[in-house]
Length: 302
Image (tube, rainbow, N blue to C red; front, side, top):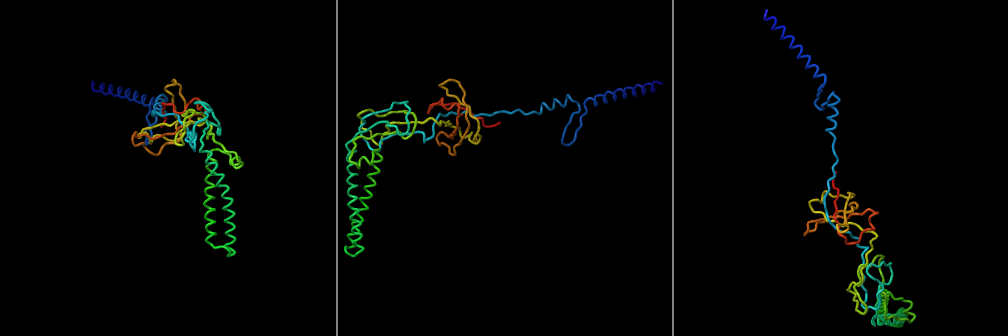
Protein backbone atom coordinates (compact mmCIF):
# COMPACT_ATOMS: atom_id res chain seq x y z
CA UNK A 1 0.00 0.00 0.00
CA UNK A 2 2.74 2.39 0.89
CA UNK A 3 4.55 1.47 -2.34
CA UNK A 4 1.49 2.41 -4.42
CA UNK A 5 1.25 5.79 -2.65
CA UNK A 6 4.89 6.48 -3.36
CA UNK A 7 4.48 5.68 -7.06
CA UNK A 8 1.39 7.93 -7.33
CA UNK A 9 3.18 10.85 -5.64
CA UNK A 10 6.18 10.55 -7.93
CA UNK A 11 3.93 10.52 -10.97
CA UNK A 12 2.17 13.74 -9.91
CA UNK A 13 5.49 15.53 -9.28
CA UNK A 14 6.78 14.50 -12.72
CA UNK A 15 3.68 15.91 -14.39
CA UNK A 16 4.03 19.29 -12.55
CA UNK A 17 7.75 19.63 -13.36
CA UNK A 18 7.10 18.81 -17.01
CA UNK A 19 4.38 21.47 -17.21
CA UNK A 20 6.69 24.15 -15.75
CA UNK A 21 9.46 23.34 -18.20
CA UNK A 22 7.00 23.46 -21.09
CA UNK A 23 5.75 26.93 -19.98
CA UNK A 24 9.28 28.31 -19.69
CA UNK A 25 10.22 27.00 -23.12
CA UNK A 26 7.13 28.65 -24.62
CA UNK A 27 8.15 32.03 -23.16
CA UNK A 28 11.61 31.96 -24.67
CA UNK A 29 12.21 29.39 -27.38
CA UNK A 30 15.80 29.34 -28.66
CA UNK A 31 15.97 28.28 -32.30
CA UNK A 32 19.46 27.50 -33.49
CA UNK A 33 20.99 26.69 -36.83
CA UNK A 34 24.65 26.50 -37.87
CA UNK A 35 24.81 30.15 -38.98
CA UNK A 36 22.24 32.12 -36.99
CA UNK A 37 20.69 32.55 -33.54
CA UNK A 38 17.12 33.89 -33.27
CA UNK A 39 14.87 34.65 -30.32
CA UNK A 40 11.09 34.34 -30.51
CA UNK A 41 10.58 36.51 -27.45
CA UNK A 42 10.23 40.17 -28.67
CA UNK A 43 11.91 41.60 -25.58
CA UNK A 44 14.98 39.43 -26.04
CA UNK A 45 15.06 40.19 -29.79
CA UNK A 46 15.01 43.97 -29.15
CA UNK A 47 17.86 43.74 -26.63
CA UNK A 48 20.00 41.75 -29.07
CA UNK A 49 19.38 44.31 -31.81
CA UNK A 50 20.44 47.22 -29.59
CA UNK A 51 23.61 45.40 -28.57
CA UNK A 52 24.61 44.76 -32.20
CA UNK A 53 24.50 48.45 -33.27
CA UNK A 54 27.99 49.96 -34.11
CA UNK A 55 29.00 53.49 -33.21
CA UNK A 56 30.89 55.81 -35.65
CA UNK A 57 34.06 57.15 -34.07
CA UNK A 58 36.29 59.91 -35.53
CA UNK A 59 40.01 59.48 -35.00
CA UNK A 60 42.18 62.61 -35.18
CA UNK A 61 45.86 63.47 -35.11
CA UNK A 62 47.22 66.73 -33.72
CA UNK A 63 49.63 68.73 -35.88
CA UNK A 64 51.17 72.19 -36.08
CA UNK A 65 52.07 74.47 -38.96
CA UNK A 66 51.54 77.96 -40.31
CA UNK A 67 49.55 80.06 -42.75
CA UNK A 68 51.32 80.35 -46.09
CA UNK A 69 50.80 81.47 -49.68
CA UNK A 70 51.80 79.82 -53.00
CA UNK A 71 55.33 80.65 -54.22
CA UNK A 72 53.95 82.67 -57.14
CA UNK A 73 52.23 84.97 -54.61
CA UNK A 74 55.52 86.03 -53.03
CA UNK A 75 57.87 88.58 -54.59
CA UNK A 76 61.30 89.86 -53.54
CA UNK A 77 62.04 93.00 -55.54
CA UNK A 78 65.63 93.88 -56.46
CA UNK A 79 66.86 96.23 -59.20
CA UNK A 80 68.46 94.63 -62.26
CA UNK A 81 71.07 97.41 -62.15
CA UNK A 82 72.24 99.02 -58.92
CA UNK A 83 71.76 102.68 -58.17
CA UNK A 84 71.28 105.27 -55.47
CA UNK A 85 67.76 105.44 -54.01
CA UNK A 86 66.11 108.68 -55.05
CA UNK A 87 62.47 108.16 -54.01
CA UNK A 88 60.50 105.53 -52.06
CA UNK A 89 56.80 105.42 -52.82
CA UNK A 90 55.54 102.64 -50.51
CA UNK A 91 55.28 101.71 -46.84
CA UNK A 92 55.01 98.28 -45.15
CA UNK A 93 51.39 97.13 -45.17
CA UNK A 94 50.50 99.21 -48.22
CA UNK A 95 48.52 97.51 -51.00
CA UNK A 96 50.07 97.85 -54.46
CA UNK A 97 49.04 96.86 -57.97
CA UNK A 98 51.17 95.03 -60.50
CA UNK A 99 53.28 97.57 -62.40
CA UNK A 100 53.04 100.28 -59.73
CA UNK A 101 56.26 102.21 -59.04
CA UNK A 102 57.83 101.16 -55.72
CA UNK A 103 61.00 103.29 -55.74
CA UNK A 104 63.34 105.08 -58.15
CA UNK A 105 67.11 104.86 -58.57
CA UNK A 106 69.66 107.13 -60.19
CA UNK A 107 73.10 106.34 -61.54
CA UNK A 108 75.33 107.96 -64.21
CA UNK A 109 76.03 104.49 -65.58
CA UNK A 110 72.46 104.35 -66.87
CA UNK A 111 73.42 107.09 -69.33
CA UNK A 112 76.48 105.13 -70.47
CA UNK A 113 74.37 102.09 -71.32
CA UNK A 114 71.90 104.15 -73.32
CA UNK A 115 74.75 105.81 -75.21
CA UNK A 116 76.27 102.40 -76.04
CA UNK A 117 72.90 101.28 -77.35
CA UNK A 118 72.60 104.28 -79.66
CA UNK A 119 76.17 103.79 -80.93
CA UNK A 120 75.48 100.11 -81.61
CA UNK A 121 72.34 101.07 -83.50
CA UNK A 122 74.28 103.46 -85.74
CA UNK A 123 77.09 100.98 -86.35
CA UNK A 124 74.72 98.20 -87.20
CA UNK A 125 73.17 100.23 -89.99
CA UNK A 126 76.59 100.91 -91.51
CA UNK A 127 77.82 97.31 -91.08
CA UNK A 128 74.65 95.91 -92.59
CA UNK A 129 75.06 98.08 -95.68
CA UNK A 130 78.73 97.05 -96.00
CA UNK A 131 77.85 93.39 -95.57
CA UNK A 132 75.25 93.51 -98.33
CA UNK A 133 77.68 95.41 -100.63
CA UNK A 134 80.47 92.86 -100.11
CA UNK A 135 78.02 90.03 -100.64
CA UNK A 136 77.06 91.48 -104.05
CA UNK A 137 80.68 92.09 -105.05
CA UNK A 138 81.66 88.55 -104.07
CA UNK A 139 78.78 87.11 -106.07
CA UNK A 140 79.93 89.06 -109.15
CA UNK A 141 83.56 88.01 -108.57
CA UNK A 142 84.56 91.67 -108.20
CA UNK A 143 85.72 91.40 -104.58
CA UNK A 144 87.35 88.52 -102.75
CA UNK A 145 85.41 86.12 -100.57
CA UNK A 146 87.67 87.11 -97.67
CA UNK A 147 86.31 90.67 -97.65
CA UNK A 148 82.77 89.35 -97.80
CA UNK A 149 83.33 86.99 -94.86
CA UNK A 150 84.87 89.76 -92.74
CA UNK A 151 81.97 92.10 -93.47
CA UNK A 152 79.53 89.34 -92.58
CA UNK A 153 81.34 88.61 -89.30
CA UNK A 154 81.51 92.28 -88.27
CA UNK A 155 77.83 92.74 -88.98
CA UNK A 156 76.69 89.67 -87.03
CA UNK A 157 78.89 90.49 -84.01
CA UNK A 158 77.50 94.02 -83.83
CA UNK A 159 73.96 92.73 -84.39
CA UNK A 160 74.31 90.50 -81.32
CA UNK A 161 75.65 93.41 -79.26
CA UNK A 162 72.84 95.66 -80.45
CA UNK A 163 70.14 93.18 -79.39
CA UNK A 164 71.86 92.59 -76.05
CA UNK A 165 71.98 96.31 -75.25
CA UNK A 166 68.38 96.71 -76.37
CA UNK A 167 67.22 94.03 -73.92
CA UNK A 168 69.27 95.55 -71.09
CA UNK A 169 67.65 98.92 -71.68
CA UNK A 170 64.22 97.26 -71.60
CA UNK A 171 65.08 95.59 -68.27
CA UNK A 172 65.80 99.07 -66.90
CA UNK A 173 62.21 99.97 -67.75
CA UNK A 174 63.21 102.67 -70.22
CA UNK A 175 61.43 103.50 -73.47
CA UNK A 176 63.38 102.40 -76.56
CA UNK A 177 61.52 104.83 -78.81
CA UNK A 178 62.29 107.80 -76.53
CA UNK A 179 65.98 106.87 -76.35
CA UNK A 180 66.21 106.51 -80.14
CA UNK A 181 64.63 109.96 -80.45
CA UNK A 182 67.50 111.38 -78.37
CA UNK A 183 65.95 111.46 -74.87
CA UNK A 184 68.27 109.91 -72.25
CA UNK A 185 67.47 109.04 -68.62
CA UNK A 186 69.66 109.02 -65.51
CA UNK A 187 66.91 107.54 -63.28
CA UNK A 188 64.97 104.31 -63.49
CA UNK A 189 61.73 103.20 -61.79
CA UNK A 190 61.43 99.84 -60.05
CA UNK A 191 57.89 98.45 -60.30
CA UNK A 192 55.84 95.77 -58.53
CA UNK A 193 55.82 92.46 -60.39
CA UNK A 194 52.72 91.16 -58.57
CA UNK A 195 49.69 92.65 -56.86
CA UNK A 196 49.65 92.41 -53.09
CA UNK A 197 50.69 94.00 -49.81
CA UNK A 198 54.17 95.31 -49.06
CA UNK A 199 55.62 93.33 -46.16
CA UNK A 200 59.08 94.92 -45.94
CA UNK A 201 61.00 97.94 -47.25
CA UNK A 202 64.74 97.41 -46.80
CA UNK A 203 66.05 100.64 -48.35
CA UNK A 204 66.31 104.30 -47.41
CA UNK A 205 66.83 107.38 -49.52
CA UNK A 206 70.41 107.94 -50.59
CA UNK A 207 71.70 104.40 -50.05
CA UNK A 208 73.06 102.34 -52.93
CA UNK A 209 70.62 99.54 -53.78
CA UNK A 210 72.54 96.65 -55.30
CA UNK A 211 71.15 94.03 -57.65
CA UNK A 212 71.91 91.27 -55.14
CA UNK A 213 69.97 92.97 -52.31
CA UNK A 214 66.22 92.59 -51.71
CA UNK A 215 64.79 96.09 -51.56
CA UNK A 216 61.05 95.40 -51.15
CA UNK A 217 59.00 92.26 -50.49
CA UNK A 218 55.37 91.79 -51.52
CA UNK A 219 52.89 89.07 -50.60
CA UNK A 220 49.51 88.39 -52.18
CA UNK A 221 47.17 86.76 -49.64
CA UNK A 222 44.29 86.14 -52.03
CA UNK A 223 45.08 82.39 -52.03
CA UNK A 224 46.40 81.50 -48.57
CA UNK A 225 46.63 77.90 -47.36
CA UNK A 226 47.78 75.74 -44.47
CA UNK A 227 51.28 74.28 -44.43
CA UNK A 228 51.28 71.54 -41.78
CA UNK A 229 53.92 69.11 -40.48
CA UNK A 230 52.84 65.55 -39.67
CA UNK A 231 55.09 62.94 -38.08
CA UNK A 232 56.35 60.05 -40.15
CA UNK A 233 54.31 57.53 -38.13
CA UNK A 234 51.05 59.24 -39.15
CA UNK A 235 51.87 59.60 -42.84
CA UNK A 236 49.88 56.56 -44.00
CA UNK A 237 46.75 57.78 -42.21
CA UNK A 238 46.48 61.14 -43.98
CA UNK A 239 44.76 61.39 -47.36
CA UNK A 240 43.37 64.11 -49.59
CA UNK A 241 39.96 65.65 -48.74
CA UNK A 242 40.15 64.79 -45.01
CA UNK A 243 38.69 67.45 -42.74
CA UNK A 244 40.99 69.85 -40.85
CA UNK A 245 40.05 71.87 -37.76
CA UNK A 246 42.53 74.52 -36.66
CA UNK A 247 43.00 77.62 -34.54
CA UNK A 248 45.45 80.50 -34.15
CA UNK A 249 46.70 80.22 -30.51
CA UNK A 250 47.70 83.88 -30.28
CA UNK A 251 44.32 85.07 -31.58
CA UNK A 252 41.90 83.27 -29.25
CA UNK A 253 40.11 79.94 -29.34
CA UNK A 254 38.03 80.40 -32.47
CA UNK A 255 37.98 77.27 -34.60
CA UNK A 256 38.38 77.33 -38.39
CA UNK A 257 38.03 74.62 -40.98
CA UNK A 258 39.67 73.31 -44.11
CA UNK A 259 40.63 70.10 -45.86
CA UNK A 260 43.74 68.21 -46.90
CA UNK A 261 44.69 69.07 -50.49
CA UNK A 262 48.17 67.57 -50.94
CA UNK A 263 50.33 65.18 -48.91
CA UNK A 264 54.10 65.43 -49.29
CA UNK A 265 56.07 62.58 -50.81
CA UNK A 266 59.33 63.05 -48.90
CA UNK A 267 60.37 62.96 -45.24
CA UNK A 268 62.40 65.71 -43.59
CA UNK A 269 65.56 63.84 -42.57
CA UNK A 270 66.08 65.97 -39.44
CA UNK A 271 62.56 66.41 -38.06
CA UNK A 272 61.16 63.14 -39.50
CA UNK A 273 58.05 65.00 -40.62
CA UNK A 274 56.08 65.27 -43.86
CA UNK A 275 54.49 68.41 -45.30
CA UNK A 276 50.72 68.54 -45.73
CA UNK A 277 49.15 71.28 -47.84
CA UNK A 278 45.62 72.21 -46.72
CA UNK A 279 42.97 74.46 -48.25
CA UNK A 280 41.07 76.83 -45.95
CA UNK A 281 37.31 77.33 -46.21
CA UNK A 282 36.66 80.41 -48.35
CA UNK A 283 34.66 82.16 -45.62
CA UNK A 284 37.73 82.12 -43.33
CA UNK A 285 40.51 83.05 -45.77
CA UNK A 286 40.42 86.84 -45.33
CA UNK A 287 41.07 86.60 -41.58
CA UNK A 288 44.66 85.40 -41.74
CA UNK A 289 48.14 86.76 -42.38
CA UNK A 290 50.96 84.83 -44.01
CA UNK A 291 53.28 83.29 -41.40
CA UNK A 292 50.72 82.85 -38.57
CA UNK A 293 51.34 79.78 -36.38
CA UNK A 294 48.45 77.28 -36.23
CA UNK A 295 47.48 74.27 -34.14
CA UNK A 296 45.35 71.79 -36.07
CA UNK A 297 43.77 68.36 -35.98
CA UNK A 298 43.12 66.14 -39.00
CA UNK A 299 40.24 63.65 -39.01
CA UNK A 300 42.04 60.62 -40.40
CA UNK A 301 39.61 57.74 -39.84
CA UNK A 302 36.00 56.84 -39.07
